Image (tube, rainbow, N blue to C red; front, side):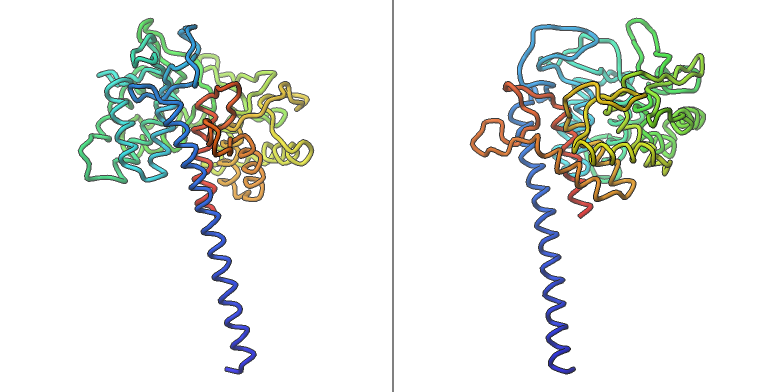
Length: 368
C-alpha cells in the first residue's frame, strides 16, 4: 500500500474512533441526566413508607376524584416500574413490586388508583391505563428475570382477571370500575389504550381475544378531526367524543400508541413540526378547530411523550428538538436543593413531569 493511501486509511480509522467516542459520550450524558432526576425523585417525591408522592408539598385538601399533596398514584408506580424495566434495574423493580403487593393491590386483582400519604386507600376505584402499564411491566419483568423470587406473572394474571371481569362495557375495556358502587364506566379514553400491554395480555392468554380486538378497534378506527384525535369513546352509543379544547398529554399518548401499531399520523406530526417551527415550543392545550393554544404553559411530560412518539415514527431530528426544549425545564444548578428536578416552581412540582422525562432520557440515549 502506498504511503498516501496508508495515511488516508489511518485518518479514516481515527475519524471513526472519534465519532464513536462522541456518540458514547452523548449516550452517557443522557444516562447521567436521567440519574440526577431519579435522585431528585427519591429525595423529594418519596413518602416515608416508600410510595411515590404526587407533589413535594403536602396538602390537607382531600378529594376522592382529584390528587393533592403527598398522595400516591398507581400511575406513578407503573411509570417507575417501566423505568426500572428499561433501566434493567431489578432491585428498583422489586421495591416497586412490593409496594404494589402490600399497598395498591387487592386480593381480587383490583389496583387502587391512589393512596393517602400513609399508604391507605380512601377510594374504591381503579384506573385502566395505570393497570395496563403495571401489567405490561410485570410481564416484561417475568421475561427479563425468569429466575426470581417474586410471582410477577401470577400478579399480572390477577390484575388482568379483574380488568376482564369488571373494567368493561360489553367487550370494550373502559376507564375505571368503582367497586363500592359496583359501577363500571361506559367511556374509554383513547389515550388509555396501551397497545403493547393489550397485545402481551392477548398473547399470554390473560384476556379474551374478543376484548382485545374490540378495544383495539376503538383506537384504530378513531376518526381524526381538525388534525386531532378524539378524547374518548362512548361505548353504549358507539360515539367518539371530541372536546373543544384538546389536551396535548392525551393527544401525544394517543399518537404514540397508534405509532406502535404503524398507523399513519402524519397530520398530527405536521402540527407538531409547525408549532416547533413557528413558536419553538408546544403548549399544554389547544383549541381543536383553530389550533391556537388556550394556555401559556408547557409541560415536560408532554415533551416526553412527543419524544417517544417521534422516535417511534423515525423522526429523530424532531425528537432532538423536543428534547432540547424539554431539558430547559430541568434544574441544573448543582448547589440547588432541587437539582435534577423538572418544573420546580415555588418549591413544588408534579411527579408526572419528572417520571416521564426519565423514560424520554433513556430512549433518546438508546437511539444515539
